[in-house]
Length: 567
Image (cartoon, rainbow, N blue to C red; front, side):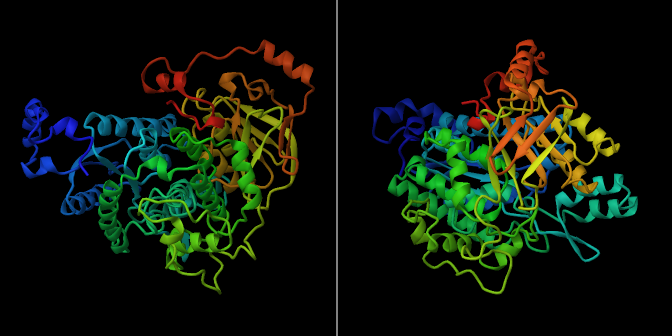
């Protein structure tokens, strides 16, 4: 099982053992013993911070995983990674660092795994960027490894109503619209997030955790096992997950099964199928494109659109449904979901997984979908038919594509005047001040991967629109992106972005924009001549940042249609 790490420690009885004496001297200072030099070295990435509930418990999970691996015969090197909380940074300059953190997390893990030439790697995750960031370096360097999700938060409660973080965002708009008073706003603030764990709805964290389990790179059931119990202590199921991680990583070392053996094109189809069946976040588009890029798997927006056309919406989950992850956990969790999809012919059961078994073998004993509940529906009687969740649009405003998450309640066509803003903050101010009216199309540009830079989520303005009762009457179009908690007529990932000279850059206040859900188009209602004339006159604004990580990111990042990657 010890392969790569002999470059660091040497092999007993060889010249290399003599040459690596100084390296072992350093390792002895951090409690390596003679016996440890015979063991496989396993890197453990622990993205802990007490700055967000999503990752507040992850250090304890890391301790449990480390103990289990070392009891199973490995030697663990532990390190941390950055964590940027979307829920905290949303609507501020700080949010620009969120998507950037995905790349930094991936690069940080690569630095440690390659810098120590470890034999395998286990990565933990919580807040949503930590999930793809934890897996990207494993795919990039085709390592032996797996990832473990920290689990979902329990819902909050106020006056008999279940709450979550999106409740707080929408309460802001409701308060500004005079629908709730300051006392109720404060109560929601105090009760929405009761403890540790990632946001409870089918937002980005739970979407990605589910997708990666379907991809085969996480343990069966880990995505839906909750973070903590009602006493805010690590749940029994999550403790079991930590023990199972040790068994799985040792098994992978014994078999030599590597990331790209698992992360095939068919595995990505499984991941997308599960994400869309659950009603997952549009961010899954961005992150799965990025993961496929790292795994050298050909995957495009057109491929994603094709899957949306055949996969029905089965999950009745927030933001547009009723339920959250703990409700799914109570009826069989993700194994039940995947068993249902497999039996109906929507999944490739022969794909290998980190357990050493195929996906179908993992699901052999999974529970059947229980009858008499409206949390997860049967494919024969879905919550909504195929193509009623994620859609990829094109048109003269989005030649490379853009993405919308629908609930089936949105109009099939929407045409209105553009209300143009070059920063998220300007749009939010206008919404909260009551300057956006029914029929308007809010355009927020220069918020793409390069322009922001960092492609901020527009949860603050989208939630403000919903809270103000304008969710069905106002559309929002942006080259930024949206939280998994966003719902309404919200179109993101417009590509090419404004900073790269995409047509979204030349929209003027009052221009007519048309959204056609049936044809799958987003168009500026100007003829080609006028569009070309405006583009010829357009000049790219100066970069907003000239130093530091954001400046580096803006120079390197690809289009959102390619996953917004820097590698």
